[in-house]
Length: 336
Image (cartoon, rainbow, N blue to C red; front, side, top):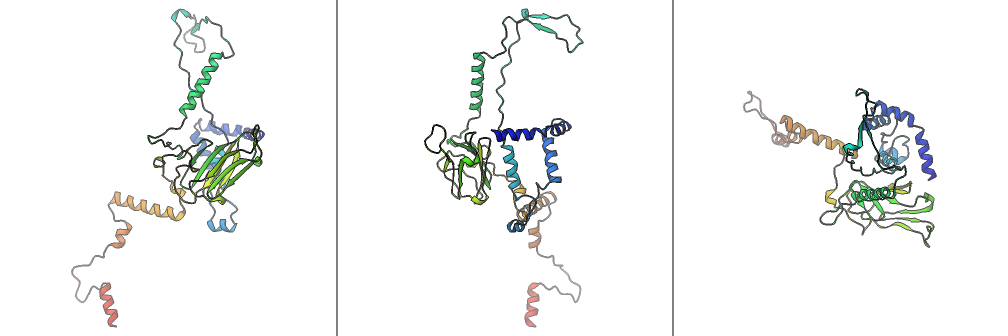
């Protein structure tokens, strides 16, 4: 589309500094990404999270609401399609020795050819029909390898904690669900009617597509769980609608729309990074981890044990000294 072409032209303007950065990192993409996100952390507000009260009152001028930066990151990643490599062709066996002529050249010249092969069949620059058919078979094989895997019960094995339906693919976390819906490349956002409600979603073309008499529903149905419509979003990038649904309850779904293919929810990765929690929960988690480490490594009592421990009372007191506990103090106070 024209929009994608313009986007790529803008991206190309930054190739020179990005190539220089990649060369400085010796081609290590992990170092490249680390340097880029370090820049965002040090020099931008990408990692800033405004105070909740400032967000509610509309005073937040910098930073992102917790989770929005990650959504922006994933939306940027999904702007560009994956480029699948064809399956590597099997290496051809070496030709018979009769078809080889050893060249009389110095052995210390690395650039000089050592063997000249005689070709008994003329080569054609254009691929033959057999080669084209082989390419098609390779492509189909690659598609089959990328097919959905099922458990013995017939449920999909989760990919990204999500799965694949007839008209869309989806992933999820405890907090949100991301749905990728394919639409014709020629459609724009203004050509679509997208409805996100608390218990249902629908994506429909406003006008009939070519060869159709009525508008087309790409997705339409009731959701498995309830969502928060005001915090859910959608964008259209390169013929794919990226719909991010914010869950009302922190739970994993078996499918997005009722009646669609289910995943085996028992196989999802339910681990969460400590940074996904609010500050109060993070503090509690760190306290628990600290107590467990101290107890395991040093054999020291944890905070709960210290709080419940009874004070040590000496067996013998000096003359004229009496130990007064809470019970004794209460009795003295009552007499007064």
